[in-house]
Image 1 (cartoon, rainbow, N blue to C red):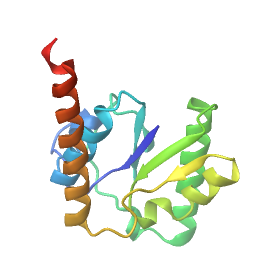
Image 2 (image 1 turned 180 degrees about the vertical axis):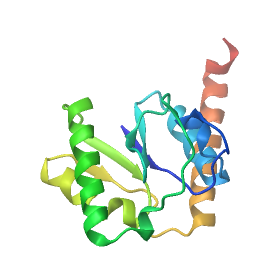
Image 3 (image 1 turned 90 degrees about the horizontal axis):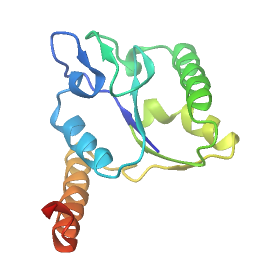
Image 4 (image 1 turned 180 degrees about the horizontal axis):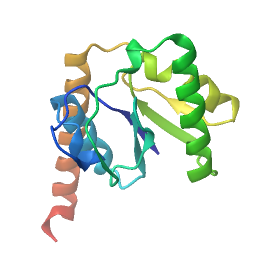
Length: 150
């Protein structure tokens, strides 16, 4: 299970959530998670836990700009939605910055969910390189195994 944070750069019109966010980072993160065939959701500052196939309108809300109490309330809403939709998930990989993780990660861990944050501490360029390497490696592995051939 993957949780991927939203980004500031969005389309100007309504779109499926996975298509709304258009930054290079988000496109790379999306390619990474979609290539795993595991479920994923978007952590939206506006919508909370967001199904990538849900149509949504663009918005201008940044989690970083919210006061601490509102960020905590956001994490509580995300956690409730997460456990309602995925009650049996035991491991989550968070592709999200510190503000998205600050209350959500400890709350997940308190419910015995193993939380992995593979890009913690990496700057944006390093994160993009990390994502690129994994997508390229997976594509090379699939080509070698014949999975891309049919």
